Amino acid sequence: MFDVVVVGAGVIGLSCAMRLQQSGARVAVVSPDGLEQTTSWVAAAVWYPTHTDADPQVLGWAGRTFDEFARQAAQGVPGVTMRATRMLLRRSTAPPWWTSVVPDFRCVPAAEIAAPYTGEWRFTVPAVAMGPYLTWQLQQITDAGGVLLTRRLDRLADVADLAPVTVNATGLAARRLAADDAVHPIRGRLMIMTNPGLSVSVRDEDNPAGLSYVHPRERDVVLGGTFEPGESDLTPDPDEGRAILARCTALVPELAAAQVITQLAGLRPGREGGVRLGLDPATGTGRLIHNYGHGGAGMTLSWGCADDVAALAA
Ligand SMILES: Cc1cc2nc3c(=O)[nH]c(=O)nc-3n(C[C@H](O)[C@H](O)[C@H](O)COP(=O)(O)OP(=O)(O)OC[C@H]3O[C@@H](n4cnc5c(N)ncnc54)[C@H](O)[C@@H]3O)c2cc1C
Image (cartoon, helix red, strand yellow):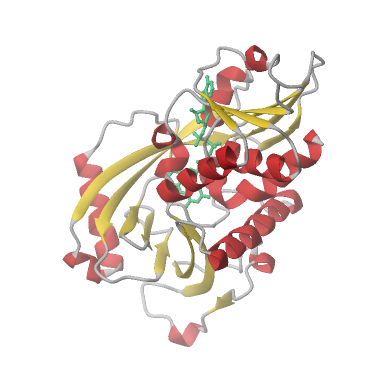
């Protein structure tokens, strides 16, 4: 018997499972597939509240997640680093709503900006190589006595006999499992390249040619990308891959010396109205806590949301 069963082994489910264990709970994690099948495995995954509204609750989640990753980077947790970033702007833009949680955020003076850009933000944020990180998270959970159950659920109620509390961290699958039509896929495509010696992230999100970002990691570089609501076909697209490579190389010319490792695609779990985190109002045999719909910011919000889930489960 467990205290909590967490359905889903992406970054949202695994972070919840760790927090719940840290608060003393006996935890089982349920997932039908290996970690590498999750959206989380594909994520770029750089701290940035992408496509999220200025909301005090989201700021709280983002800030607590920032602090947790900063601690993990200092402790040498696999895959976690702090990454210097340049955000290039093409129109007059006020500083973003989340600057209060990013200690070194600054706007570059206009005199230092070269065309076609009109502004630039510089800041340092957590960046995570998700393969090693998710593997570390699962190891932490099993080392602490947690159990991974390989099961694909037809209904969340199918695990209600395992524990008095169920956490729904099924990402996109929550559309069906929680009967929530607000959940929808947002396809993202990436190119993974060898790293020609880059160490700074560069973002040009309003590039008229398409969303452009370059995120160096220890062993490779992630080039993005696309943000395509409603698209769910994950078939590789060589033309899109070449287009991402071309606009990222225009942004960071050193990439001309890099080799393609692979092209990836994933489906962000988008949700109209934002993240759903809270107790299910339906009364049943146990408590059901939802935590899904993190869109393009699941890594960015993961630990703050896990804190709230642990508090609700207590
Ligand atoms: C290209 C791309 C780039 C991204 N970049 C970033 C970034 O830079 N920063 C950032 O913060 N976020 C980024 N994201 C978003 C991030 O990846 C997601 O928000 C996050 O991975 C969502 O995590 P999750 O755990 O909710 O979902 P998932 O990782 O999809 O996990 C869902 C889990 O539920 C399980 N499940 C599904 N159905 C069932 C069922 N029937 N029964 C049992 N279990 C089930 C799955 O097997 C899986 O284990 C990016 C995403 C993409 C695609």
